[in-house]
Image 1 (cartoon, rainbow, N blue to C red):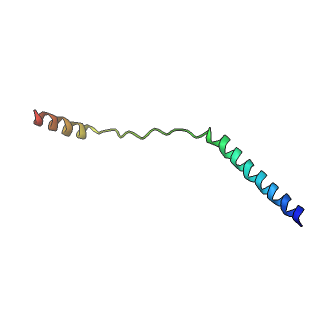
Image 2: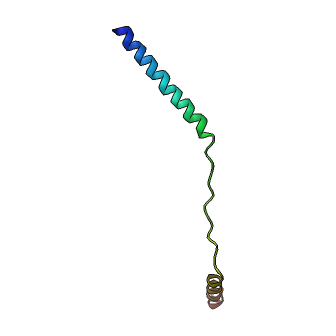
Image 3: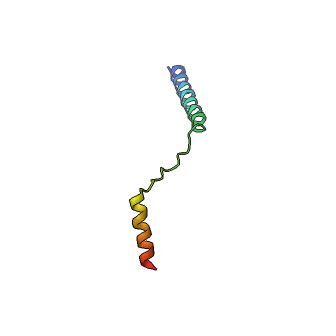
Length: 56
């Protein structure tokens, strides 16, 4: 019985090490995502320019 338990513990350790190695390899394929920049419409640009000229 002790030999079977020892084999089970060794097998579990092997499986967990295998999962960790696979996760490490997959981590190199994660891509950085750039944030989406909003495009301002012509009306928003007119309002911004109006506010900038009002400050002066």
